Amino acid sequence: MTFRPLHDRILVERVEQEEQTSGGIIIPDTAKEKPMEAEVVAVGAGAKDENGNRLSVDVEVGQRVLIGKYAGTDVKLDGKDYTILRENDVLGILTKGEGAQKAA
Image (tube, rainbow, N blue to C red):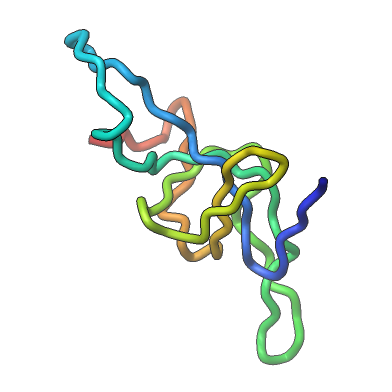
């Protein structure tokens, strides 16, 4: 099944974090929080302004983004869990390399 988000909505797949801490402690499923890091799977064409002009979306398929823990709507497509959210629910785009700010 294919899914195409409408307007400024994006479809993301949350990236699961490691199940073990750096100290070797294994975190059980009941103690885990929803991951804030996600990979963009599909992007809508963009919202329209009051004149009917299409506004482009800043995120692209394949990018890693930070989203709020409880942002968007969780859906299941073809047995996989995804989240649909608006572009303004994206907190930032994660990049590797020079010029990127390191998260604390």
